[in-house]
Image (cartoon, rainbow, N blue to C red):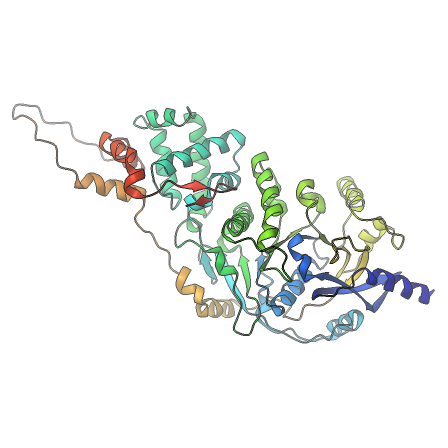
Length: 513
């Protein structure tokens, strides 16, 4: 029986044999017995065909991500890893041996060596100890912002028209104050003509968008949108020792708004697609992008948003970027996207409810047929740190389904202290670039200055009654007054020539020039 088990394990492993370099996932398990010599791996050359890492809480999914990121770094491949729960910071320190790690190394035939990796600690704005990164609203674009604001299709279309109007007028929307001022202008008496000029947008719909924007500001969004704007090319760095930089992006003050976090990751991916040149077939990717909590990206997403995700995932592979979606259930990922994911690493599923049972049956149907495992039983019987795996071989064919005992990460499998993160962030070359918020002159300030330079109107006749006292207004109303004046409208009509070329937008509505 043991001989048959070993033979079956070797037959499965033969499907994972590679000529080029590969990520080592673990070793094959048959009937509860692991064969350390039956290796399960992903060829580096197929990583740009993307992948899925799924599994219920507590099944070892995060440790799998940590192990994969470490191997990629060792191979000189930069990694972006979303650290949603804050427990991946240990990658910056070497791991610690213990009996469990030693047994796992023996089971998987791994010459385990404690290893630290070059880590950049990043966060979405806020007051985190990590390097804060931001994006301007103009760059972020209306489609992604609509996802953050939970707008419906009609409201998303309206926001797109508002952005288009601001683009035409060369009004940079750097932060939430700028967009709020533009919407308030368009919904004011002075802005009715402009509102009609961009397609007869409903003022009621614009008001809904304004309220959603105010709610985003209250949830900390105003700390994220602004300058200096993050340059996605800073993710594509390799350390002096040849190891790929691991960029850990944490939630920080955006914990109450995980939708912003997941949408920002999509913005980064869209920017990489727009900026990187075509790469063709590479021996290893330029960057691997781990998209944690991926279900947040797809929940309540508009049709336009889902279509653009599908297009971006399909096209970004030609730029040498690999994307791994990480979530609890494969059914969290739309079929159009799931069908493009070449590698599948499925940790244990729980089937406690009728919905869980349905998800389990759907998951089983997505795997190739196998005579070695009862898939429903296997997916609910996996131990912690074990997964059902199938990937694309070097020839592009699916590999046999493998119950795999996964390798242990070589870095520290625990979070490090805030002091260590702070010290690492301040020592980073990115801290000087992004560490201080910049509030440069934007649309409101520029237009106000333009009016201040204009000649003063002639004084009224001596016998004219004095004008009524002017009531002070709040700043947003002042913006409406400024933008609604005839002088400014004339200025805006010629702004395309005076201020530069018209803004164009890419696949996701992000700014291109």
